Amino acid sequence: MTSQSSKPNNGNNNLPTTEIMQQWLQNQKEEQKTKQLELEIQKDENQKTFELAKENLKLQAEYMKDAPRHLLKRNFLVLGFFTIILLIVVGFMGYCVYLGKADIAMRILEVVSTAILSGGGGYFAGKNAKQKKGGGPSDDLPQD
Image (cartoon, rainbow, N blue to C red; front, side, top):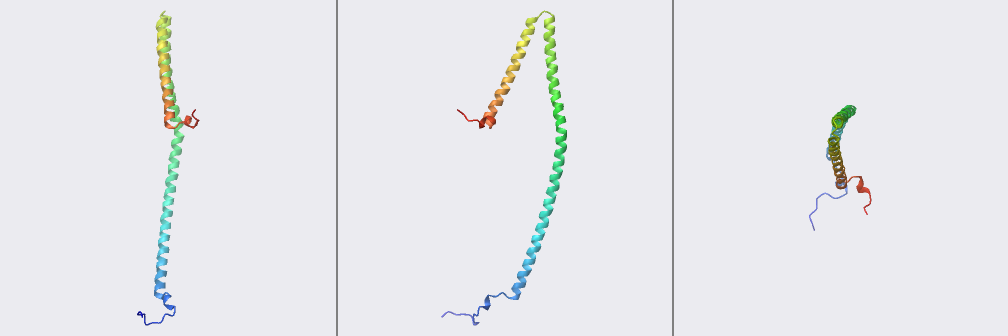
């Protein structure tokens, strides 16, 4: 026979003692306090995130309010630059025609039109290559 404890086993040994129950209740109270502190910290973090997001939206709204003005100014500068260049070329060509040197004016017209067509063709060729390479709208079309 094996050695057994001297107390008879009536099934009462499985019940927790009052000391263990008090310790368990104390642990539960501490867990509740810890959870409450975690919730307060999370609430503070959420509030700070909300304030930061609100400030970010305010700054973004200010930027977007000023953005069209900057774009308009830049577009006017570019348009003005090209207009001035065009007026200079047209004025020079008109002066050449006025002096009776129409062949010089025609040569200038050839050079300018070649430059414009070459530059524009290169721009669109690069743009199309970028779309084919980078997943532009043409990738959605079926290929034959």
